Length: 492
Image (cartoon, rainbow, N blue to C red):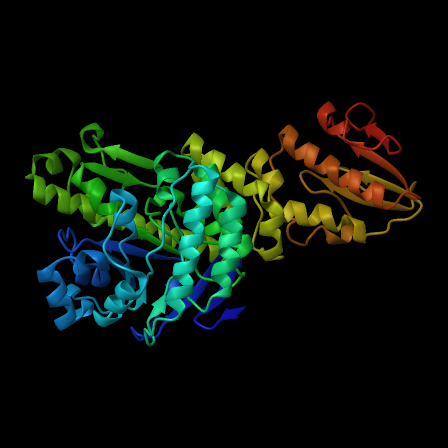
């Protein structure tokens, strides 16, 4: 699966490991990729160190800050961003839309700022879109989306050579507008597709709505469009966002949190004053105790905290990539979701889009681990259940959790959460799943839905379901014309 500048190599759910070609920088960035945000005014960690010590292949800075400052502007035009920032990888630049969102007005047009981004040597530029916040009236969202779309069309006409150009996808919290915005952006000849104005959702822990917004944007965009989740820099949500199909993430959190004495973990954020031990083995945490860090002067403590925050952030991105490559990204998402109730809401929203995930999800992976009732709604389960109508058992068919019986014409296995399947498929993915002995009701209900689908697809076949103490909520989903035998009550 390829786009002109983006090639997908591995896929799990909607997540993918890909290669984004950035021709102006002469580099190819492996995705999912983290873009540390560099503030020209305050460099907490020098860009050259981001590259050499943390492995950053790409970063982002704000071209409007350079544009609006005589000193920065002249230096950037004279030397170019790569020399000014001392960074050899790819550089993306924002247009000033952040300032527009914060202050309500900026003094630059899309052609002017794109030309400036080109002239200072940016590798990926951004038009002046309007980042419509959540929960605004629909009329405002529609009007501002129309303006953003007009500016994307203007951006197509600006000659920027081989600089890639972002096509932001806006639409507030209206999922139909996000989907429409995705289709419009996909129809342009622009290159990278940021989902914008989601930071307020993440700041308010509205991860379920963030998932819905991204899912809608993804429905509008092509499957091979590189997607950037603007402002998504907390490692807690990387696995969830990657599983939804986001490829690029920019983070100022490492520096902003350090300034406020906040310590990042994949489970959330801790205040330095609350820590007696560091739950991390990065160089900063290995060489210091929390008490030692607190005794440092403000600037030194801020720099070391920023370094820790970067270490944990890049480490989580590598963890996500390895999970994706191994085919167990959704297990990682579910594990991370247990860190916070709002993250669990996000994961449940993800499983609500199982049909959308299933269309892109790999049909064969390493292992399926059933970890909770949410696992019963994963795309692999949905796929198995939907495909049961392709199977045509005949005569008298036993569906059983136990062994085969010669009293029936066919004897199929039933395993929660998947439901029934022919025995010869027992060693195929995902039916090799590791499931708990004490299955929860949701898993049994999912299996019962599979029984119902098979029976309804084969009305001439006589089915008997032999189960071990299934809950009534699951048995209620089994069609009345299926004979039901409780093996725990009648082992014969």
